[in-house]
Length: 276
Image 1 (tube, one colour):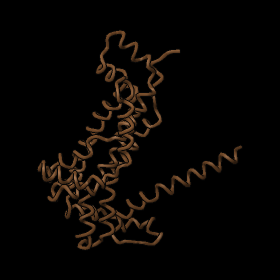
Image 2 (image 1 turned 180 degrees about the vertical axis):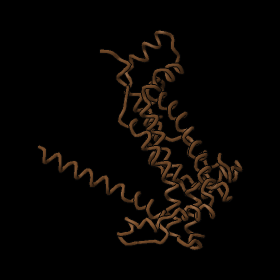
Image 3 (image 1 turned 90 degrees about the vertical axis):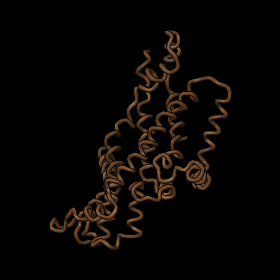
Image 4 (image 1 turned 60 degrees about the vertical axis):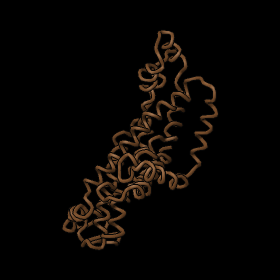
């Protein structure tokens, strides 16, 4: 028994190290003055470490501006995801209305339609008809409602005991009060899960912002990094280090948010509102 536990912990530790090593190597590569592609490069000489790679890439693409654009783009998508996801999920799970099942089936069908199939008509509508190219709103609109988030919220709302809502309705509570005071506090794990899963999408999104923005000052960091790699990376003294520095800046917020909110993935207070 003890031997099996030790073997399990060893296997899990090796798996964790294997998963973390690319991130570690990315950080180390971003700090190296001279590139060392050998395995020994993972354990660099302290004399070979510098922050000049961050300075070099910032001089060419303005990391702070790219981060700000990515943050505004991502925040707009998260706002739409949270507001419309909660409202639609609550309506599909709690409210009784004709066509609810057909609407949910249509929502599932949307999941199999690739975004690339809709990209050309979306571009024509947003850029030409609405004139929203080179704008934050033009970047945000196609992702403002996330069908995956709606499904996540619906499934969590379905787990809530109906007696909670029935008791509140008897006391005279309306649907908005039910949603705000009863449902939302009990589905915080769903809210955090939907936000984190949605965050990765717009934060790393490249193709749509690349199509809708032509001004470098409006491009998110992912697009700026791609332009740097394809056009001007060779002009730096250490292109590999500069690219790794940009990748660290792009990945750091997502990793930090996951570490900060990971406890919500395993926490749930759904059963706390009902006794017996």
